[in-house]
Amino acid sequence: MRIIEIREVTKPISSPIRNAYIDFSKMTASLVAVVTDVMRNGRRVVGYGFNSNGRYGQGGLIRERFRDRILGADPASLLNDDGSNLDAHRIWAAMMQNEKPGGHGERSVAVGTIDMAVWDAIAKIEDKPLFRLLAERKGIEPDPRVFVYAAGGYYYPGKDDAALRAEMRGYLDRGYTVVKMKIGGARIDEDRRRIESVLEEIGDQARLAVDANGRFDLETAIAYAKMLRGYPLFWYEEIGDPLDYALQAAISEFYPGPMATGENLFSHQDARNLLRYGGMRPDRDWLQFDCALSYGLVEFERTLEVLDQFGWSPRRVIPHGGHQMSLNIAAGLGLGGNESYPDLFQPYGGFPDMVKVEDGHITMPELPGIGFEGKADLIGVMRDLAE
Ligand SMILES: O=C([O-])CC(=O)C(=O)O
Ligand SMILES: [Mg+2]
Image (cartoon, rainbow, N blue to C red; front, side):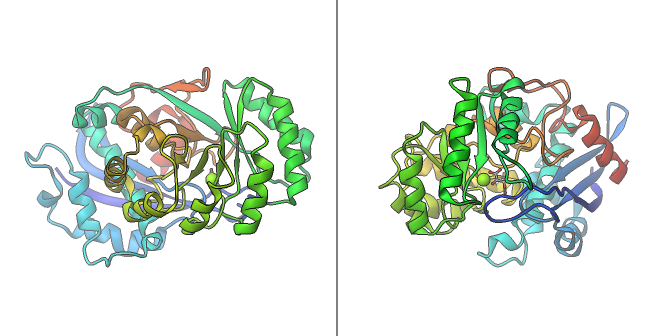
């Protein structure tokens, strides 16, 4: 058994939307295929992965560094002890040889994208859904029913409050019970008006989360905290710079409600610093580490160990990114749920075609691997790359 090829293509996932920090007019994503020599159900096993939105495609790093380390390794050194499957931890170690510590953002997306494809291949070789494989390996029961929330509410040229309300209404109509909108890309009085109009639209049918995308300095963060704490929000997300743990800690003095952050922390060491210094409260706050941006599931398992050491339940993690990899981790390892972008970042985001949102939850289908084969538009572009 061996990996015979690794392919990468960088694809556009652009749209005219804008958060408080960036627009997505030039956004790209890497799509990766890990091609094996294994046959299952009459097909060659190919694992697929892609990186989450918000960071650009990583074709250079994947093609120039990480692919060749895997393909150059002794194939037997990448297998599990009995040689019956690939071993994600050994493949990860092969990718990371000769890499210095620190500086995680430089390579964590490239490694995380390949790691997703490796796990897809491993679960397909076992002919099981990834979430079942993960639970089985950990000796726990999977929970195929996963909480999901609808992320959107971006700034968009010409978008007024009526369009924002209509967008949110569309999420409620599709079964979501929590919706998210962007803040910090307009003046505070304008954001207050946008928030009030969404709250009026959703009434008691849903809760609202707001996301500042790391835009605020301390003064602005406090001004928003004082404004936002008057509303029953689901969470106040990514308030200041992702690495400014002192700012995050300071805001808990001003904002008693739930806060969320972590989508721009890319290693278990960064996660540990957040828990050490960020003043996050395990009884109400949320962590949003996204494996596809942060060295993959091999590293995410280390992050979950850090959480455990600091007394945090995996239920407090609702990853960023809206991809099926995190859905599998949520169902298999007991996370609190997953993000979803019902109208954005297609075909990469979203669920297999037969999956419906009901009362804010989805139920995982029984598809081998991550489940990409259940999403026709997605598996179409994947197979174009490698089959
Ligand atoms: O706009 C983005 O970069 C995405 C984001 O923060 C989120 O989904 O929480
Ligand atoms: Mg965010």
